[in-house]
Length: 120
Image 1 (cartoon, one colour):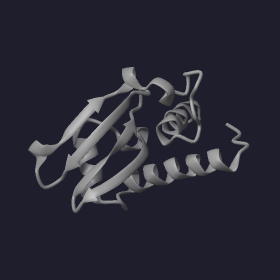
Image 2 (cartoon, helix red, strand yellow):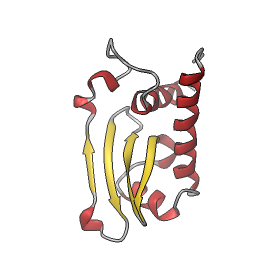
Image 3 (spheres, one colour):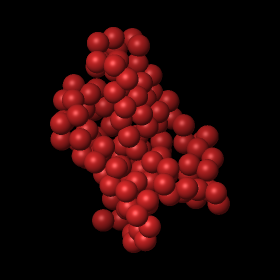
């Protein structure tokens, strides 16, 4: 997918970087293990971004192998304090199919990135 503007290329690269960090465990191997334990296959999951909220606490949005978007809150020290919610049906303009989609939005770009991976 050709990205003509620097801003969209930067967003693509940001999504690619976050995804690679989780997949290879360089962000935090325990976080990567938590994602896997939730039923996601790391090599088929794309991350719009992962924010470290506190030591061992992460929040963000991921896109699974079927193109569904999930918001997560992972407290690696307190598994009872974790949350994972499928937000696909409430994406609105974050969906790349929405007429007002913004390709500079990381969730939108993660969805496009996941689609591109499925084609490749």
